[in-house]
Amino acid sequence: MLRSFLRGVLELLREIGDQNAYARHLKRHGVENSAMEWRRFSDERFRTKYQKAKCC
Image (tube, rainbow, N blue to C red; front, top):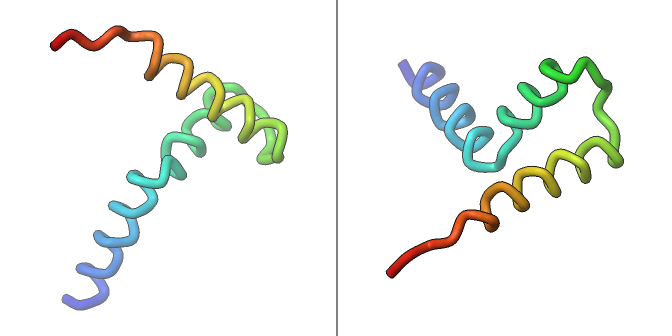
């Protein structure tokens, strides 16, 4: 039961830290993990996030 709980916490941390999203990005684009690819992923993610104007 403790292992299951810890696995859940670890998955939550990976999701919060964008590690799961990055893994999906690598798989979707068929590329290897690299510093340059992480930068591309991060730039794309931030651009998408901050392009949307927030109202009130």
